[in-house]
Image (cartoon, rainbow, N blue to C red):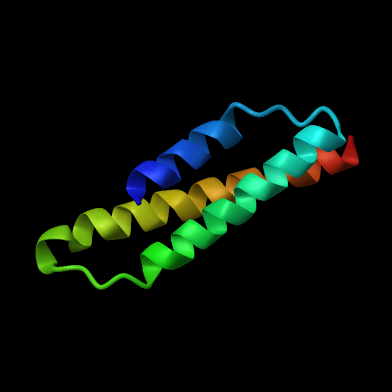
Length: 77
């Protein structure tokens, strides 16, 4: 699951929102990222994986906030 989240984040970081098609793809990836993070948040993990689980969620949420800001900026331009 973390590999899927990383893949989505990489795709979002490499997408330039220059038109409607890119914006739609960006929004679709953001929706997928939100779903993946929600799914991951719902997982029950053991003590040995709890720290890694928390770090992935924290980094994912921070990235999502950045991508939401990027989308708002692109909408203004």
